[in-house]
Amino acid sequence: MDGWISKRIRIVSRRRVIAWSLALIVGVLAATSDHRYLANFVGGPYALTQADLDSIRDVTAAPRYYARVIGNRVLDTGLRQYTVHTQNGVETSREESSAYNALAIGNHFLVVRTAADNASPSAEGKLVPWPEDLENQLFDTKEMRSIRSSFYSFYLDSDSFRRPGYVVIVIGILFLALFVWQALPAWRAWRDPARHPLARRLAAWGDPMGVALEAEHEWDNPLLKAKRGWRLGNKYLQRSTFFSFNVLRFGDVLWAYKKVTKHSVNFIPTGKTYEAIVQCAGGTATIPGKEKKVHELLAFVQQRAPWAVYGFSDQLSQHFHKHPQDFVRSVEQRREEWAKKV
Image (cartoon, rainbow, N blue to C red; front, side, top):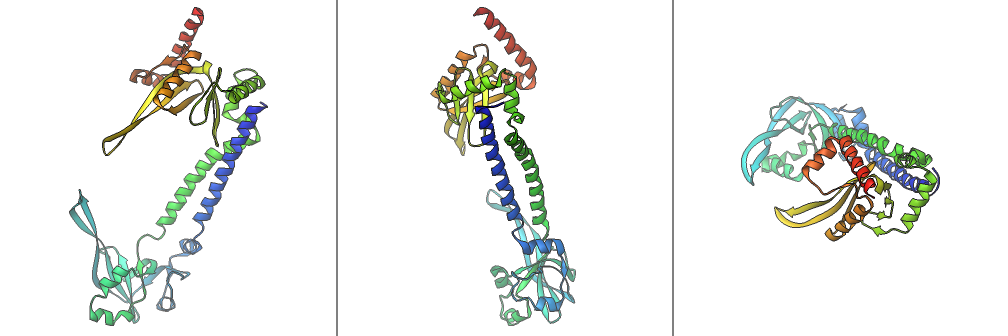
């Protein structure tokens, strides 16, 4: 297939390849931007001794912050964190979700946020700066403030360190699958437009060059323009956007109807939107517009495909989606009967 349609397919396919490639590059850069986390994700947890902890001046810059530490003994600070359950803004229950213990490591103390029932002298997690509210609660007395220097300027949070990394990995796998699903077909169509689904569909319509010339003429001289890039001529419904291009024939129209969507905010109606839905053999045209424009579009389609089914009902919808072959045969029969009358 050569000519105008081939050029259109190449243009939109190239745009899709470039967009997906840029998205992949940005995604990889974002996922690997935190080199410090990556190093600790792969190499940690690191067994840190008292000397290692004493050497940390700025925990946010410490190369090894995914740590495993062992204390001489465990002290209960008495601080607890609770998960509060509410209903309609009223507290219904609360449960203890974590505790703050202090591990004695030499002559220093390392505060550890851990599970409520965990009193183990060993802990694993990430070293993070003190949050202001935690520091204010722990050192709220003169006696505690007097021994503040015995505590490290950071604490250990035992929440799963690798969980965010695993989430990123899962998202990355899903994105790669999406990339393969979307970008590879676009790449093939860019290199060879004949491999595009539209090209294969148009090949069944007869002379590809003749179809391309007719489609180009109708695109340049449309009888009706609509939103979302749709243009309608005598034989074709065509849509061109930045990332897509499609051509449908009026001769393939099976069913068309008006779709009304009601909108509301807090159960208060805010308005309606309208769409003309044109189901064809090979694709669907969903054309939004004001109600008057949608009626005009459907009347335009009906003039050029009078044999098709018009109007919506639940019975028609079930028939179309559950028994598509039967629906197509019934429309073909209507078309034959219409042709005999002409």
